[in-house]
Image (cartoon, rainbow, N blue to C red; front, side):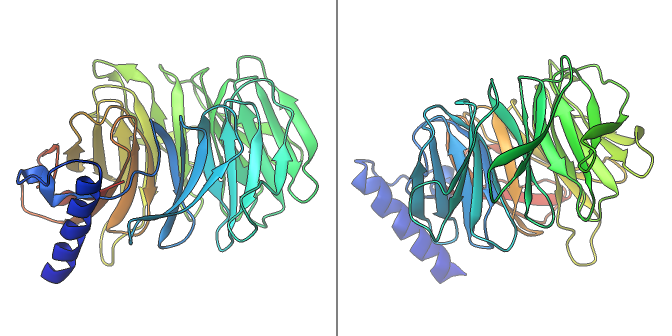
Length: 358
């Protein structure tokens, strides 16, 4: 491990030297600095494979990055406004990107640098993307109140449904199911039947805008996150999808808007966990069932942390407005979570570290 860290540190120093920077000897120097994936803020990150991530941001680019090797693989240029969401279809090289330019583009890592499909029809920014389990249908949601279902092969819009004030913030397809879940600026969560394209359940409205949602791999649970400020709102909520609208627990501790919430892969012999990231520049990991905070990572100066992408039970990627993408490593720690790099840890049983920045 020492040789590997030494190699990473040399790469970091080479990159910094090429940018006219001198390697420093502060605590932050333990964080490997790779070539930045983007110029400007990053809005979204997801996994394409165990080694590759895909991200999008204010520079309008969709970037494929090998986060283990610290190198950019591809930068797709096709949107003319910032990218809001990216999504990949598991086991494929397909990439979907949504944008403030009101379109969704489909890319294939193995088919050049031009989009292979374009989905046009929304009138405002597209914030929601979800792919059916069989890879044949695409669901999109927008601030224009429309939820749309598309045939991926033909890029034809097959179903559209407009609900007043349903300003869509995020969309998830429930694994192994015909159900779709979406969050909205109207503070509600809706469950859709993808076959009839009708809402089957509307959860009780929360006090604040619902910013994001994720569904557990077994399809039984949903976690959603809330807007807020000064510690008011800012929570994430665990719901039981088998009893729609049934709240299980709430995760409270962020001081500003919770922008992202994700189920983490359960470590061998471990307990189920949820990760959240916030505009307060912190990321927290929670015991899914008890809502106990197991650890906090504060990234001072990173600005809003708006997107998370767990890669396995010990590694996840985090997108920030000010300091790019971060590779974060989670281990079992002492009573005080330790942090490498710019930031400070909170009390908890986990050791949460920044390994690299790019």
